[in-house]
View (tube, rainbow, N blue to C red):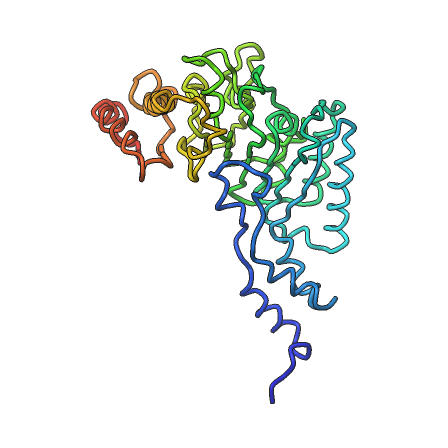
Length: 364
């Protein structure tokens, strides 16, 4: 006799529905051009099951919110924080806090709202929000997708006096990862900013495409600061002399499409505890085929700046003074390596210096 699905034991249904679980869709897109659809997925099996009945929804609820996202719209009065509070109340009411492995917060604007100002929220409002979030849940990965200015607010960093109109960067990505379950003694109680509230082990910063700026800014582009929190993160901001990157970060990833080499050079200020450095400077998609992006950009300028970035990256381990500062750096990875001969040529050029100074370094 064939049993109807509704008659199957809850434990068996849970086992069956578990086969429909999939990785977070955002993981495969963190290195692509930042966009508010980072978490979109064509797979809606679990959502469909949750709509069948209340009992089935209770079975899949933990899987459904294992990778939680919150879609927000910015306002100067911080009314968007009420959506965060509503999410946290739902999590507590549903008793699913322990199952949330990742949280992605996305700020987006409609075409009409893009002209609205992104005023700074009241002092302490953001830190208070992060304290509420991490008092309720403890995700292993926290990702923020937002405009450069909002990202600076969310991280308590400052932008490096950007000329926003030159860059047309609508979104950037910051993703933080915990390597191990957090001990309460490791949590910062002094100032619960996003970067200090947990002992994050890995940080990814995706600043998007710089290509549009090549058409607007004159070569060599120095002085046309991009909208970026990178200088604050690694202590490259000479005016503020800040050093915000937590000492717990050992894995640092930087992604941008053809960034200016003077800006990329901030990575030379990475603190010595970083053991792995990953960079990706070439587009994954067809950005170069977009006439609005490329406009009047000189392709030779793009190549020149990219190659200069490669050279600066290898200076970290090929120059004695740099290698001494970054003595714990054991792995340099370039996400362009499989498709870009220029990276291989640059590695070959510095091979002897690297071997003599730091033979234990792995470069790929």
